[in-house]
Image 1 (cartoon, one colour):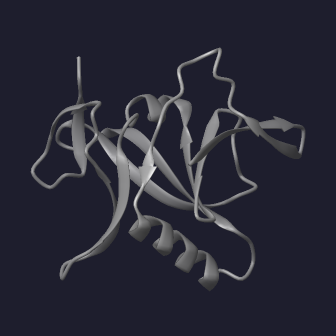
Image 2: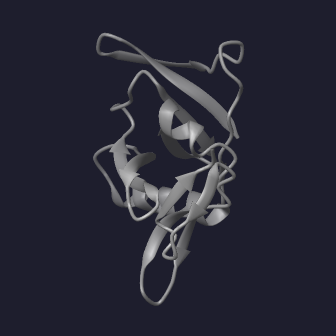
Image 3: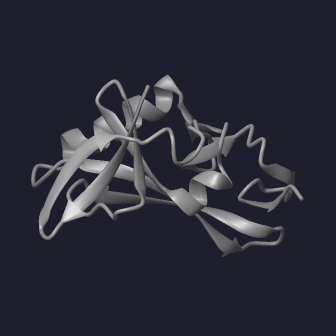
Length: 138
């Protein structure tokens, strides 16, 4: 999996390898089901390529919650890190990545719902029963 950082110069965006000297390299894993679902969503969208954005926000019953959005690939911010696997792109801002490092992103289909989920987050000290929020390790 390739990790890229996007930098902006006015309206023009360019991709470059993430600088490893300024901070330790962080990792996220995407399951095959996650990759296939992102690719499927892109096949449905005819206007432009989309990427899955994952962020961590304050909230939920345990302190932090995961948020997934489908974003335009050209709507990247300076601190965004792009993880790519099999043509599917997952975008995470640096602050969120610090709370997600080492996690796996999956897509689950149950009788009750279909959703992207974060699995095995080593940065989580505990999580709520429904799995949508977590408390960060001290």
